[in-house]
Amino acid sequence: MRDAFARTMFSDAAKKLQERAGSRGAYERMARSGASDRGLGEFERECIAARDSFYMATVTPDGWPYIQHRGGPAGFLRVVDERTLAFADYSGNKQFISAGNLSVNDRVALFLMDYPNQTRLKVIGHARVLEPGKGAELEAHLATERGAKVEGIVVIAVEGYDWNCSQHISPRFTEEELRVYARA
Image 1 (spheres, rainbow, N blue to C red):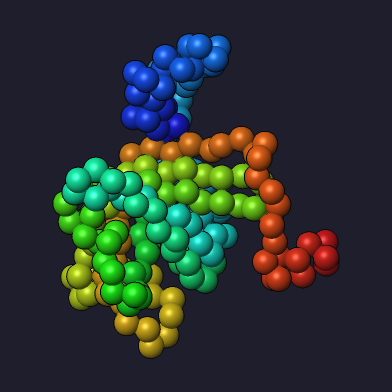
Image 2 (cartoon, one colour):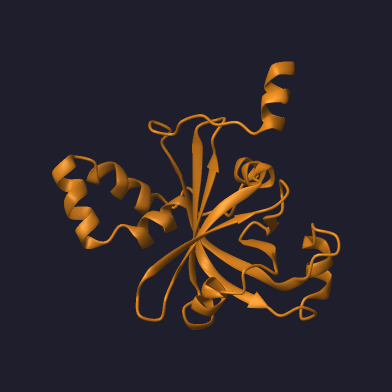
């Protein structure tokens, strides 16, 4: 799916800049390879399961990008199958910007940071929000906060993903991660 990511995200303008920088050839080979057309693999699944937060981008009806932080217990974003992610959407500040955007344009991008290992996973796809009770079995599987009101289930059909280089990711650790690394 890295090739799908490259085919989708590398616009003509991006390709021109890649040509100027000397990186176009490598990215063109990646886009045409088809080698990574498989869905989310074990490495991606493990990364997603370990995350306790991610950033989600949607697009407003008039084209403005909007990024929202999503957080919860590690693994709250679940891999349903090799091409589907989902998470429970809990009651929050009642702005409904992301949900409103998705009701008009289903395109979404996720940015998952693994600060201790200095890696990031980018995912693009199409998302839909299921109302409570519309996916009861999935809702029960995704519920992570006892007693909290689930306002919907966000289901993402993954179109592609890519891993970024770690060059400028500063390592950061949660208290739990510090305890784990101290024991190692």
